[in-house]
Length: 191
Image (tube, rainbow, N blue to C red; front, top):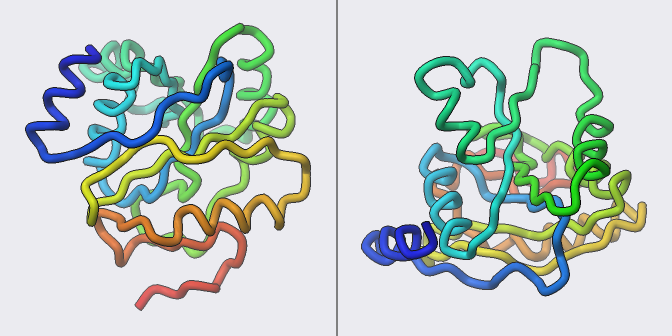
């Protein structure tokens, strides 16, 4: 799959930047910006190229025939969004049951414009005592990959400022739907 991912991305004119840091076997990897279904395909190909067996949370309704088996094979973890679940506890518990786990989360929570990022990924990483890797996609440069890692300490504002600084120059597929700021609800209003 590594060679196939690399070949397809090269044919599409995309470049993968960065790699999985040495010694990291468990982490939350956030992926942003996320404004198109194409983001998933490009990200999946990049993970294949990098040799990362990534898992991702996706609504359980999509796990029906014919997509269900394919989504599971690709690393999908079904999520029941209709029930009142404690996803932080659920995903943190997954980390405690395995020696190796990379969970991809799109903190925007939707491909549409969202005034603020969801914070669950931060709380999962903090509770599971795993780092957060900053995964990205940049349509302007046709690059995607892995940026810095952050070990959450509970100093939410300081660490989110670092996250925001990293993503400030990334261009979404649909820039009108991308809100850079994970911290401040109305800091970047839709134009």
